[in-house]
Image (cartoon, rainbow, N blue to C red; front, side, top):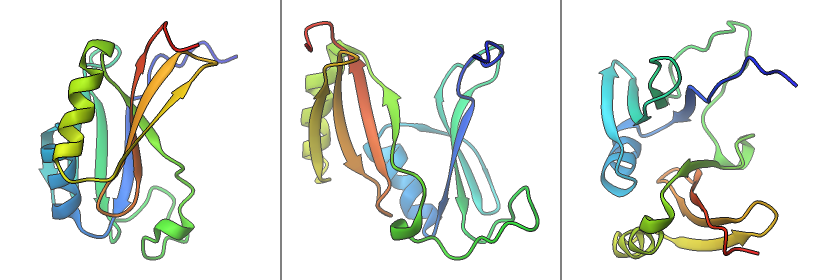
Length: 141
């Protein structure tokens, strides 16, 4: 086990419609824009470990990647390796968040995960990425 890892610092999604996806994560999910650069939007999730803010990066598909020999074609949800990612919410906010998201007109589904006592809300962003809003609930058995 690697005990040096302290937190998740950043998740980056490659997107086709940077403006549309940014609007979804700000208006529907409720994240704030931390910084915008040409072809990139950084969204603030929460304070992270050691002063590093936890963020979601939205990179237009035309942006270069760290490994120059990496073959990165156009974004295709049918070919992505991303299953979903989860953002934590407070259990006290679960019902209100579920109703708020339903009111936003996005497809919403829910699940409980007994093995870890989680209650989850799932939505899709405009490009089909699945976002989970999850809370710990000791009543989930």
